[in-house]
Image (cartoon, rainbow, N blue to C red; front, top):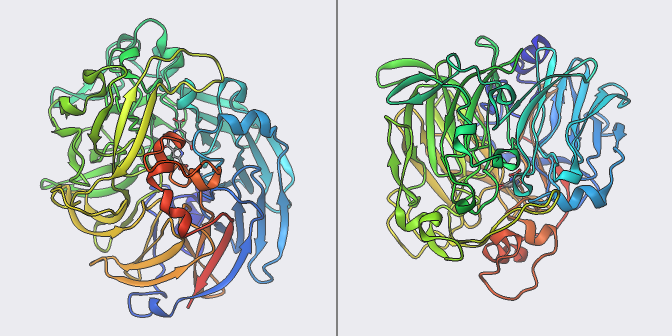
Length: 589
Ligand code: PQQ
């Protein structure tokens, strides 16, 4: 979409979740720099009136700010001069049908702008287009059925004359897809499923490719069906609840698909393609250009949905249009985004132990049998697997600075116990099939050597050209907030205790911190208004890591409490640092 592209080229705006179509989360603004960031002050704040986990971040388009809340998904347009609400919109949704099928808090990752409209992907799967000037609904379309376990948490993305959205529900046996709707009418233009027959996945045998035998190889017919038993693919997961990026020159959209359902691997023999995969699809037709599966036959819930960042880099002496992806499974992948050639695959946290390495020829992880939950079997507790199910990194998007050539990763540092059990499918009911608990990794990020560290997270700078960690700062809790890198040489991120932090992009040195009213799981965004650079973030504890506080699950019993799919026990002490509450805090010099 030319309008969106133009808006994102002007750093006064923050017009897409990633700041640009490439998802770099880099701002050319430099008024706030490494020297003066210590003088940063909160400029104003705004309470959203909602208590649960606040993901995503403010959009700023031509001076107007748009913010959103978790369920009930209220949208506010705010005048930055008066700080007055220009309009607000709250959709009508059935809480009793929607909230019970949201796996990991009632989060929403944000809005999209395009064609004079704000696109809101509601929790109940309804996709709504609002007039950006008035907040009046232009159209709505039903994207899924909550009665079948479908919900939505993702931010949409406007590409050309379409708006892209996905689906959540991997813990309910939902079959994932990416859908494109017409921005004017809401009519479905195409829908590409993560699994099933080629006519559903929009894979063109002989033309769509994958990485195999050390080369880009055309896919044969029915490449997904062959990797499932019977018709299990119909409830196979591979949902698409993360972030989508777009390369206007190649006209390709990129994203990742999530875990295969159920979490019990013994019940679903085969590679379960194309769950856990990176996808490149034609923006006009949805046809698959290439697809690459990172974690075949998942045994740990390492959803492959994390963001894809599109930057051009020299790898092994050759320039490539690359796609960079830091997966839940602990591996940072660099591929050629035009061809799908696998270039680099290295761990971005060396405590990761479920694989020795990725075989660059087959593209497959070399699994350590000790940590194979299938090898150990149903009703057997596999202990000491790192990372934990919530990954070496969860959904909080990375940032990239062209000044340093580095990626900045919001990371987790936990291991887990995982016990799969037999589960049967009932539409609309949880289809998890594993009991989990999670604990600190107790190992060094840079070496993987065991130590007595208790930190649950870190913020890491990584070189995706070489696959090397450059620096890493320990954090007491997981970093569940998306970062932003700026031309001022500063990188900003939030912490679960609620600090907004600024660090030096080159060294990681902490330059500033401020405690916001609640834990931060939102993305830090930056923009300019009346000649001044602002930094803004939503705080409001929740998400999977904060589910104990957000949903009030903690009964205070044992430190390995498996409630909240293992998160309650691991993050128990978070309650001593932060409490519920949604607030936007805006900072300036
Ligand atoms: N959501 C969060 C969060 O917002 O903190 C964390 C997770 C989700 C996960 O770790 C998941 O595995 C997950 N899985 C699905 C799915 O499989 O459909 C959906 C979601 C979601 O929509 O929030 C999460």
